[in-house]
Image (cartoon, rainbow, N blue to C red; front, side, top):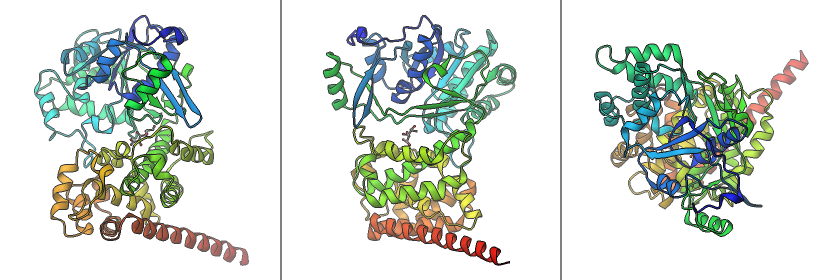
Length: 507
Ligand code: CS2
């Protein structure tokens, strides 16, 4: 082993109780760290079998390092290293496709966790349902070893139902609202699509013995860079091929509804609460929603990283405006959370220059991410007679990055963003005469952000206008325009509130 474990205290579990799908950096700096604390506190049968979908890089590195890796907690005041050590095995599903199903059916596995990103749930952003048009979903439904996460869960649960039928919990750890219910719905839809009565036994097993609690996860975890590898190697005195960078902040709120026990994740600071829905809303809208705005506008301004973007005064003003005036009114704050302190902390976190979180990373998969972040706040704002100018700007920024109008060059950071809707949107953009037409077709024809926003013509028109402004006059002009409109609306509301109060006082 290359990492000198004597310097640290890796958790060293005795056996595995968790199967984890999505062996990326987020899992390794979040859930794996909480699990290490639970294992150290006596839960040594809660080791994790980690599954990477297709990529070998993490699996190869961890195998060569006795399953260990370093978490580098990075802040402007310094970096501290730790080694969680919570894995008992890791493998690549594409290499050993049968193993995922076998582990899922194994009664020793009592919790299955997922960090497969918003894009890993095989759902259609336009309908919210399982995407039957996705060829990988269709292949999984036909049979053989499944390759999608939903197919793996469904096939694994089928096998478990037919075998031990022992209860199990499926815990989504992705930024989806109501992620437990969402995952359960997709698994049920998959099983319901199987021919004849093939899925019935598993559906009955789900009714009786499978729990899908929701959870809110939070930690900013960028991609690993060579610079980090070098810095970690220098501190460790030996190489780690796959260290994970992470901010110091970390939070996990979980609904305590498990079917077959759970690790004592509270040992690592997790909060068990029946207000997970509120935590999710707060996080997915305030943090992730504002993050998207910072990423798209920042990329268009040439900022490589989130801290570079938020250091630009207009972007900081737009971020504050969207957060306070457009996202926050749609959020029910969890009991005991000081929302002002939470928001102040968000700005500090985004400003962490040492972390170097890239705008291209946050801007990736915008079609599936924005679908989770914006529709409800937009609809609520419109129903209150208010145009959410800054959310419209974030969406205009997204379209300008992913599907630039002919003749508009969004820059390298925007070009580096990948998105499952990129091809479809680019086709529309290539033949669109204006931003207005692009927005109109993206929302109403492609149903990019679902049915309800497809029927919000004033919002679509505002997005289109801002796409045109970005293409013709640049992103700064669009920022000035939407900030002025948003600030004017806010101040006219304050004035009319005062008037109402004064009129009331006169009576
Ligand atoms: C980000 C998130 O990439 C993104 O879309 O908004 O990954 C964010 O960094 C995490 O959710 C923070 O917990």
